[in-house]
Image (cartoon, rainbow, N blue to C red; front, side):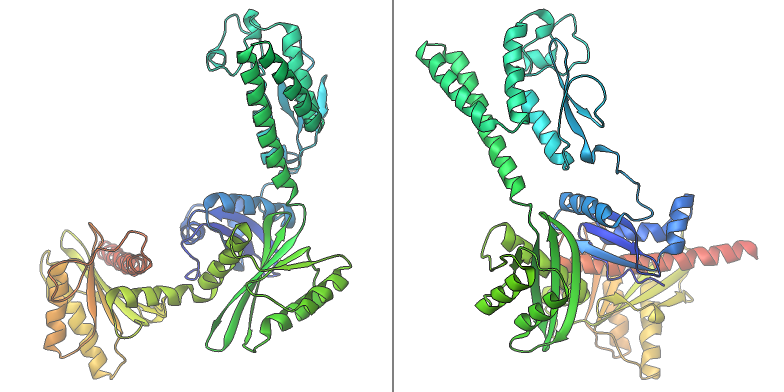
Length: 516
């Protein structure tokens, strides 16, 4: 049975592995837990998905800051691992060309292969970069995009995105000048073009052709921006490793991200005992057996001898960087975020709940109650238990309501709370650190009265569905947390699980009653 409870609610990528630990599928998600759970909850699946699930043995994940980052990472991981169940896009747009047609008024097109007339530029390994260049050229030099010249000027002319060669508002000669400038950029001769345009802009200005001079100035500015964009892209032609860690209870939880040409590629997790020089020892051991990248990014300054060691191992210069701000610092922070979710995600939820409720100790064991019925019939109660932030299904309990007639959720809650903790007292069982009731102030007060009657003291709250308000005993005003507060999300998760468990039991009873 695959445990999905450690999957976070963050965006990121998930990797399905088979029994041989081979990656057989890579997917992206805005909410990792919700997306992966869908695979296990769907009753009807297509043949390919059924085959995927039959071969699934374990699930791994990467957390990203945004859904867009997850999309980019997914593309990188698919290309690297070529999973069996992902579609094969080798012949799609990744390695496409830009085609300059040989029409009277030429256009720029995306071409999968060098077929047909015209001039081809590329191939572009990055589809994103290719599309950026294509849009830039069409916009900056006002090239036509229509397949056939229309009989009247279209909307693009009125938006000043096309000079309307269709109705003769630009000559073939003037349009050809723009095409020659496009050729220079696509041929990598932007500097030569900039020099030419700057000289022409000065001439136009001196001859009082200010409108044309302004157009040339705008083209110059746009080309300079394009150069800066391409410069940033070229800066990602090297590889780098990002290393960060957290220390808890004399144990080091370390994670290493491999960044391949600017994109997150793989991650590795390590747990070992803390020593004063653990980071340097780790780096020496790890890179003795693994390739050394151009840059190693770490959260603290290390000895110069390590730089020498890595440079000798790589046989090229290697840098060890300790960024304090900027993109590299954000990557270090992202590693910490992944460590927290991977190793401490569940415990952090418990700590957040303790803080928001002002509890004296972390609520490591939480029990939540819910009532389910259909117009007062087949009334049942459910209790789910969370231990250290995870569902403990061995301690789930379900109750068939015995003492309540009709629709009375508060009385039903009183019954299940009384039965649960009376039995724990009789069996000398361990009481939970927190009780959660699904409902409002009425259900909460009913549960509190039962605890008082049987002389049990346990912190208790209720969560009302309509506004997700938290009610506490003795307080007239509910506690209203932000929608994305970690403590509130955790309580909602527990409440939803209790609700699911109660509905499942209610349906089972109704099904059995129909059979009988």
